[in-house]
Image (cartoon, rainbow over all chains, first blue to last red; front, side, top):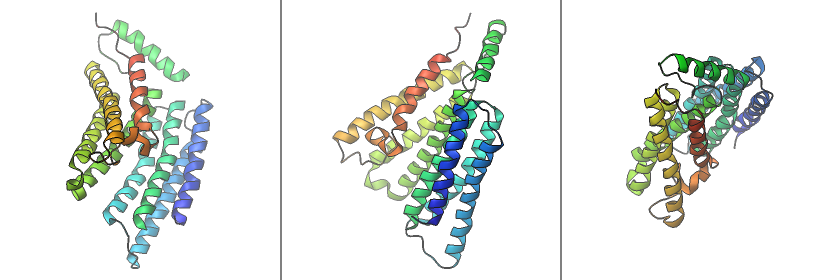
Length: 117
Length: 153
């Protein structure tokens, strides 16, 4: 597990907790919950840029490269889709949708790490 | 929750006066359900596609099951999100197939580990996915029952 994974671990779990607590408190998605999901997206973008630099500088992905990139690109789409889905109906349930992003990104980052090494 | 109940109350009033079917399944908790189904639809499709393209001959039966599971999740996601009675029926069938699938494949993967390597979404009752594949159809059926369409006059 590398630093990219641990960044997503921390940011993802934090975002999930923030969104789930907001949902439990019966709040609709607000700046805090949406920004926490944006932070997940940002850390995934850092992973993307870092990975491109690593591959460009000659590092080899141990597993299937296209599987790695498939995971990463899908993970990048998730937060955008979740935010879109949650602002279409602003109820507390949308915060639980946002809460799902962090854990999903975390699981996907763990899998990406396995593929890379 | 209050908002969701208000919305459903409005919808049920509307259903009494207007014949057009309205959708109450994609609001409130339904949105979370659809979102989780969508995540499973994406991951199951990607996983099945990868298995079939790269190592189909290793365990054809398990990988065909993966593909079947992926189709079920896609159908469930779309039909849960769509309004109308037909979509409701499709949802019920898809979620029931999912429940039977996770139970049968879960049991088979325990008793016949040769033909069913632990590599489908439903293997070991979805243990690899935190047992969410087992919980999801149960929650789905409860949700569909609570938001079943009113009988047509």
